Amino acid sequence: MGLGMSLNLQKYFQANGLPPLRYSNRTISKGDALHDMGAGPEEFGALVQKSDVIFTMISTDDVLVDLLKKAAAMEISLNGKIFVDTSTLHPDTSEWAAKHLSGHGATFIAAPVFGASPVAAAGKLIFAVAGPAAAVTTVRPLIINIMGRCIIDMGEDVRKSSLLKISG
Image (tube, rainbow, N blue to C red; front, side, top):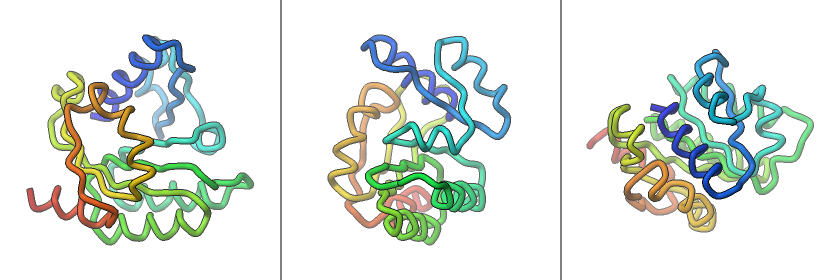
């Protein structure tokens, strides 16, 4: 799922003359298709340092918690950075992430997606997005007609998008 979303984002960056996508994965070879399209692999810390918006899709809540703790422990400022997680998280994990990142000057958006891998590859996912309005406005152009066909705006409480996804 994450690969399809990332490939669509890289295609958008290429078509619009933007810098290439930076990506990270515990198994970096899983991004070979991205690399073949001109995207650049990065260690997670370097990716966070060089990026203003960081999309994540993780396998378990614990992986996200570990990544966000690692980001906060780095010797760089997270001030102004936006972390967008497209996984299906427990609502408590989303709430923790928002509070944790806020304490470091960053913003968290919970954005679980509806759709299977072929839907992701087609750029037709539905995103259930919750987080601060200004941050959502910033990431909206990276989602609509690139990775997804629409956004369900769940407001600012990041727990709500997770609740929608797990109940939907």
